[in-house]
Figure 1: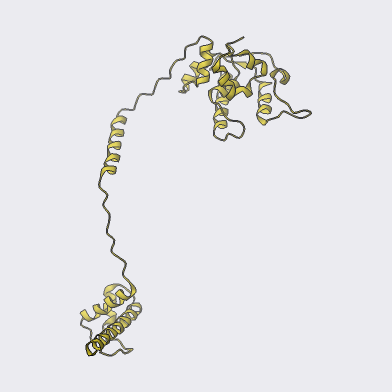
Figure 2 (figure 1 turned 45 degrees about the vertical axis):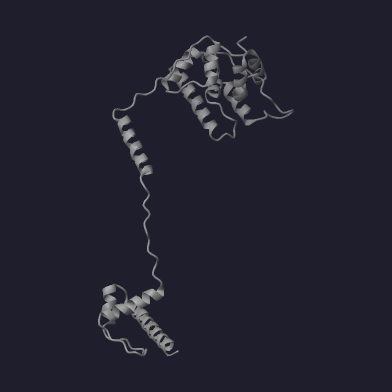
Length: 255
């Protein structure tokens, strides 16, 4: 029987689905199946864990491929039945969860066992740190866990990173300059401005409003870069506003 400790109980909370009832009562084993290793290294919350399940399956696939290629030491054992594995069943029905169904299908053909002495070096070659459950499994079997060396920084990377951080801090520290946006010109202001542009161009307007504009309005419109029709309409209204304003001023003087 292997070591039964708190770390084992914690591991079974995450990966107990991959262990039979007898295995859970036995404690840390000297070797594990690929599915058990994958669930201890990359635990997941079940079939509906969209984030954890793909990572777990990627680890399982990598382990099986490594065993087929002979790049990880392993042993093979006799097949086991689902009764011996202790998978839960409904009364008169199939296995309760898809997870157990998938596990049963894989484990009846997966007879591979891998020891910590074989798994830890392979995991280090992948550049992945062992999980706390794998560390506890190794320690229970008297194996020290090697640390994965950190990759050396590429030459110039630290300097480039420092320059990028300095530039980012400079942007944060730089005073914010707010652009002063002038208020948009109203339609009345635009009409008055275009009428005044015609007066500045030397065009003469009668003191009373008529339908006929003086010659030369089209040339002023061309200088502003707008259509003559739109410009003329604004000039007419600006002219009329000018006459009305003058009349209102005269009435005030007479009052």
